[in-house]
Image (cartoon, rainbow, N blue to C red):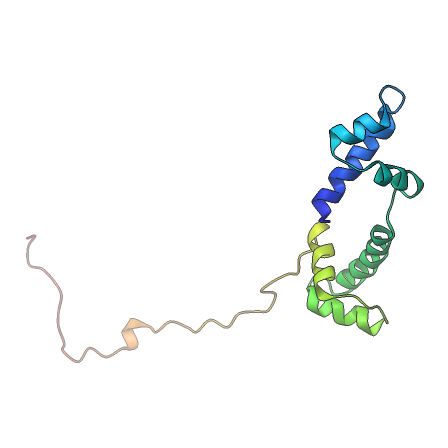
Length: 136
């Protein structure tokens, strides 16, 4: 189940919870396209284990990101997490950074731009003079 579908189901469960005194839970589940068992499971545990683990992992990711002054991206942050003994994938780190708006800085190094050639130093072997005596 993708994150977008999951959030729709959670919104539906919250709606059902808010309106369960006015309408039948069975009818609302059917109309909203969610499972009744899912609603009752959500009542017992509104935040999933995966969401709790993602929140804990994101705190570590943000700490590493701040320590690098915003320079490290997902691959380097993953290496920092592995040094701390965490086990997760690069894609999970990328997803958590993307969802929370953490982006690494690009181009923080000074670029070496070659100096342009000065036209006065370039020899003119043909000795041409480009002056017009009158307008054409």
